[in-house]
Length: 458
Image (cartoon, rainbow, N blue to C red):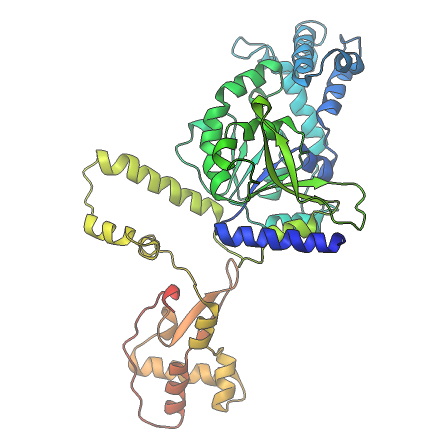
């Protein structure tokens, strides 16, 4: 079996996972993606830049790498050097407001980190990137949410409609929402939120179980794809350690978690389908592996050919937030006039609840097309007219004569189908054709009372 067979097996497996779970994937983004799209540094390269730019650092980064296996310890050492430099000869290199007791001493190196990341990634534009086709495929996935340990703002650039949640705010959030970017190690837009030093990681570890509990729903109920990490990355191991007993059954592979592993040169051979992630206490878990030098086909697989949605993630977040507030605060505390019988009836089924929110779902495009088969041009042609305007004029005459408006709602004669954010098309039923045909031939006809229809019922 060769690499094309490998791709086919992976695509089939991802498709099956998407179908079984019935929801959008979660993307877990690491530094490799920022490195791929704008040349952002990895951790060692960032330490090297920081050491080189600190005027009172004299040993060079190789000394620290030789003395310390833990890069966060090197971060702590460099942080102390930056603090000493800022309060000494380097004071003019930092904003005056940072010299305040309201900031921790590590603010100076974090300010520098933010500056470095900003200068490297600030010019990134998804629309002008040489990876534009791949980025478009990434956007097409329409992930439920994104989680990242990166400090940069590249993900926000790629998914501008998604809302950013930084650091400890994730733990304090009242609910897990749709269309959000969880920056669990902080963000360069808020330097003091960055997790970088040994002390930062110790504090992060203390709160990690709360974070893992918050994200457990994502890991258990959604397909999950790690992008920009290696299988040996401590960030993956750290997150999965707290939830491995819940997600894995003995030595079984976790069926919904994938890692996209970049390989510089792909030969025409069948690559591995799984990898082992070491966790705490000498344990390990098995997750699915996708090996590639080209991410496009992988992103296509996780897109899965879903019907594109024009629903704004911001609107969905507002809906969830206001519903949460209504249930948690307003119902118990306020004297609201509520038809609880209606609520109970609506909540007894997903369809009823959707109608309560004014949401309808198009269950069967084939059924819809069968019931409303005509564009107005097609209907005009079938009536023998040379132009659609003749059918439109005939319909308008009937409307004026009988005081009706067929196109003001979805009904047994007409339906409006959205084809984009602001565009739509009108389609007409066999009943409408019969009505126009009888009117054109001066035959008697009866107009039924217009019955408004939900598209999910069609």
